[in-house]
Image (cartoon, rainbow, N blue to C red; front, side, top):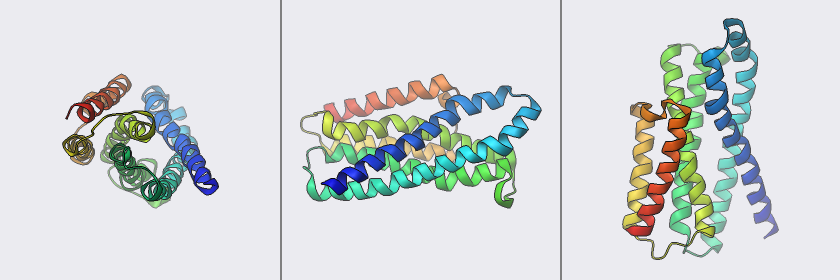
Length: 208
């Protein structure tokens, strides 16, 4: 039990680091970059952004690793009553982790000219931006799954409800790979979309 608590504590701590940096990028840095003077923007991209990306990607890595340990613990020791909800949150979190390491970080290296990476800067920025906004969108459902599994009682969760929610989450991820920003283009839009997505998932789990 003590070891499980340590991993749970570490999971939350690393998660705060990861999602905190995610919100910083989407709500603060991106908006600042749109308005910054050329010299200030150049300096921020050279000195600030690489440091922030380091904390961002490694926060994601260790959130994922501690989460895997906790999933094993819950699966082995916990009641099945909350399992469908926590698995929805976990799948959203895993997709977010993969977006960080397979889309955002590789493309940001091109945008910032890090580690000798070269390529189409604007295209790379667009790909990284879409994946980052998608992660912001999914952060609400991810947290709903993490907390809802223990602290929200939903009677008789059906497989149809779980499957419908999973289909929506996968559709959101497909948009991150092949789609467009749409209403996520603005800070207000992505916040509203995330809250709406949580409400839809909650309703589907409760009704279906």
